[in-house]
Image (cartoon, rainbow, N blue to C red; front, side, top):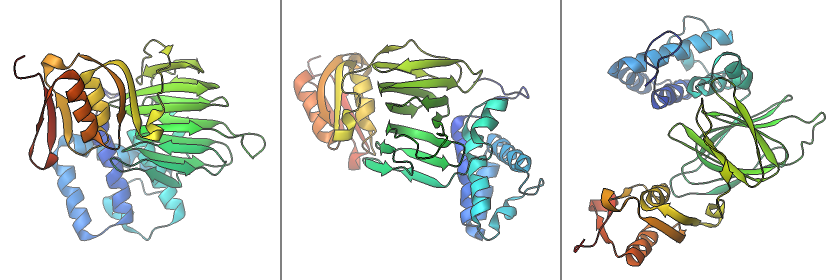
Amino acid sequence: MGVDAAGQRALSPRVLEQAADWLMLLHEDGSAVQRAQWQRWHDADPDHARAWQRAERLLALSGQVPPALAHGALQRPASPGRRAVLRSVAALLVAPLGGWLAWRLYDGAAWDASVRTAVGERRRHMLDDGSVLQLDTDTAVDIAFDGQQRLLRLRHGQVLVETAPDPQQPARPFVLASPAGRMRALGTRFNVHHAAATTALAVLEGAVQVVLAAGGQQRVIDAGAQVRFSADAFEPTEAITPAIDAWRNGMLVVDAQPLRRVLEQLGRYQSGWLGCDDAIAAQPVSGAFPVDDPARSVAMLAAVHHLQVQRGPAGLWTRLRPPASH
């Protein structure tokens, strides 16, 4: 793991997200039980305390809460203005952005909505400007539309965005930010998946300008192309994967993908762990599999590739293994 600007070991995205979640939870529910749970989390790990200190510093920088913030300051009666401040700070906290880019993206953003899906759920959401946001399983998106910008933040999961012309004049930029960077739509339809500190962008129509979170390196991705990127680096741009948005219709379409990768994708649609033995992990898989019925998809894979299926109690895990004679 790297180091931050102060020379300390960098905090993990997961710890920062936990701190952001506690920030909002204490604001919405300042009960003694909730405060005690927060204290246990805070004291359980030095990194938790460091993440909370960062949250306090960001709140102080906002100029709208006391600099010497204690968690009790979040227990005052809720107000739309303070909720917007806290959401902005929570968004900034979990985004590993540097200096001016971080504040440009998040300072003053009026986070006024949060759209989520549960594991196995998909949904369609119409935005205020007429754009359409389609969310895949286990996805969370925050929304901040104001007079200057149309800003979305993908915390995790997968979305398909179909932008509409802005009804306001002059037109506001449409930006989707992930922890790895920001993507500005240039009149377009695009698919974005973020997991494990990496964002995958596929442009179906138009073009998308990508600016990395660390360092500001940028690239324009045109229709028919896809790219994966982290906060500080792009991977090579490739041709778009066929049927990349088939998940909207409940299907996973793959062409010669490693079995392990296919199982990882199917596993997003169920609560239990889904995987395979290392001996068959690289075996290429092609086909179309129903994501709403992962058990059926696993059975299809086992039948076609002559594999064994092992399942744990109460569906806690499922493993594909080579045939007994292997």
